[in-house]
Length: 293
Ligand SMILES: Cc1cc2nc3c(=O)[nH]c(=O)nc-3n(C[C@H](O)[C@H](O)[C@H](O)COP(=O)(O)O)c2cc1C
Image 1 (cartoon, helix red, strand yellow):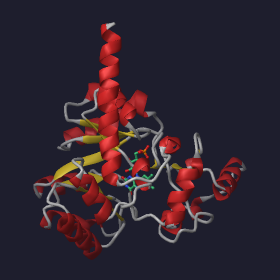
Image 2 (cartoon, rainbow, N blue to C red):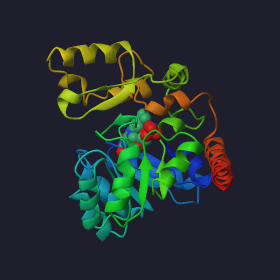
Image 3 (cartoon, rainbow, N blue to C red):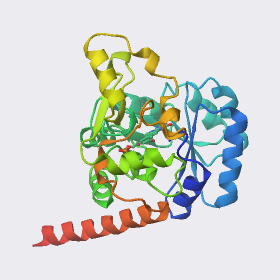
């Protein structure tokens, strides 16, 4: 998560036994290098670096992650076709984010080590298909490990994703409301106050839909799109930065997934990971008892 998943959160997640992912977004190469070394100072465990194939700095950022021997690189928004072979040649494990079966197949052919299959319940930029429907279709279509993302915020979601054939899950929204997350306190407060079904999708008219909390600005943009007005100028202008870094949740986009209704309290990242694992174990045990009865 660009701007939000910094060294403190990533190290805390990795130290808790999961794989933290640095949100490198569109940052310049020297900044990415600094984030990696700050993370390394906080954890000896592996972590991933999420980079954007259509970043203006992509070539230099690829050099940095290869030189720094980033354990895993997650390729977010944009076409990863050019980046993937470069990273593989640099001995980096690569997991592109996909939102369709066709894209997952293509990434496997290009040598991806795993795919993050992101359903439209997710926060941020989204595809068209739900996690529930998409994950098993991708599981049937590829041989590489599938990591399910979108709508997973507790142990029940984790078990559901495993039942669909995923090997692991990627969680975004739940980690925003952690003590180590770099988001502005107002951004976190908005999420905690959100309650169920509090997200809307804007930007369908631009071809790059984004799921955000339902705020006055988001309602205005939706009205403009309904009226056929162009809303392109709202996108790519750092609206996540405005909300998440500056704390201006009125003028920025509070990107959040549909599972925001399950985010009810501030925790440490370690508590989130522990709670998910404990809940998953309890869920599996309860299901086993139910099947046996
Ligand atoms: C605030 C926010 C920022 C995000 N930024 C990125 C990003 O920079 N790159 C990326 O690949 N995905 C990004 N995502 C998507 C997450 O990596 C993850 O796949 C998604 O949040 C999973 O769904 P969930 O929100 O239901 O947990 C972002 C999500 C949120 C909520």
